[in-house]
Length: 247
Image 1: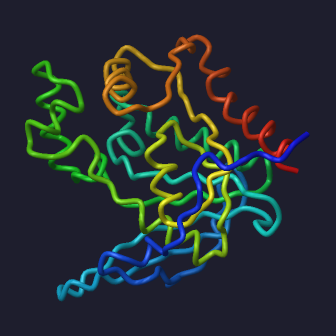
Image 2 (image 1 turned 45 degrees about the horizontal axis):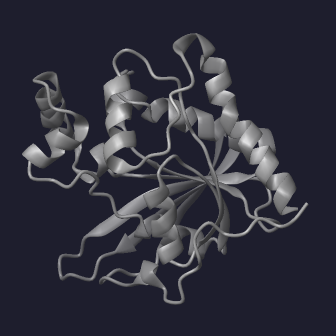
């Protein structure tokens, strides 16, 4: 089978180190046993050169040997409401579990967990957006009403982490083409986009539809709640197919 061609061409300039930001560096290394397997956890931080002495932080959870073909990679933004409180308003916790299962099933990969709650607007602003959604706005309209862009995230830190790990080619677990484009602009070759679609529920379907129709996320809505098992495992099948094609 022929080798997969990259979805986005690699950039020729190190965008991950531009914009007044230093390269990422490892500050903590620890073993993290999980129900998906035993991961190596690396904590990263990066200074922001703006005179404020501020730093950005994120963690990378690593499983297996990453030195061969392009590994599975998930760049995941923190979602306190779904991952801690069990909110059904979004698919974030489902996506986290889908990615962890896919990486575990393959025996190798990286999950980068970063602190960009509410697509980068922070927890309190996100809760204000929830109140606006309760009043009839969708997730994008609520952000705009609060004075924010639809998505305020900056993916340069995950790109810097991948560079620090020596990873320049990835199979990216995401439904968001802009995330793939951001990594490519930072010099990471995205050889395949692996779907990470969870079954919608009555509370999340409007949110997911807005992401598809207004933000360009690739969602099929083929999976009903009773077929949640099938939705969760589409990522595994796609990852396996892309891995076989790449090798």
